[in-house]
Image (cartoon, rainbow, N blue to C red; front, side, top):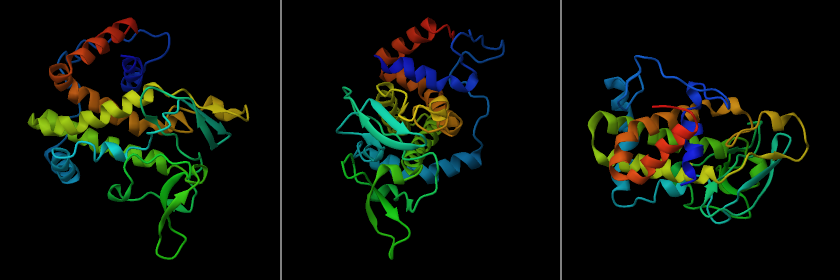
Length: 263
């Protein structure tokens, strides 16, 4: 149940949610989901199909394949992330569920590049770090890398997967085909549940980075694309969640009202 407070904070941040502000929707704002006003074009929907149809088809026989590629603290279930200025230091604590892994550094300069989704080990959570492609070595092998040396690659993998889920969500809203919703919701639910139990990273250097760090990146502004896709996902899946996961819908609406946001 605790997932919903964070879910709402994330999915509504794009419309200007502030700690002490009451948001009133415009009079012409639709009462029916999806509420996003910029509908994807036919060209966009064709691209979305090209991006996700293969994964959606795989999801029908293996619903864990894509979810397991999310960069999470799958085994350790860490809640507390520690950085030292703009570099990842370590993570501690234990949540009841896997939580979202924090990236390696604010500076994206690194010898590593992220593997293709097909090359990511499922449920990877290892004391050796994460497996990345070393572009400076002959043959560009995949090797274990210290998290602090991987730049923004961890975040980039999660953003990629969330974007695919958002595209599937848009396809569901357009076609009403549930295979798109199942694929998208599985990713959305895993990520958002894991993010709820994560705390704001703590800067061990007690510096400026503490003022700009976010739950998933070293700078709040870097979360724009992620939050846009999460917002789209929630909006496009709203009716599916209400139909298939009614208990979650009830709690979402409860927290909306408690948070002084009215739908």
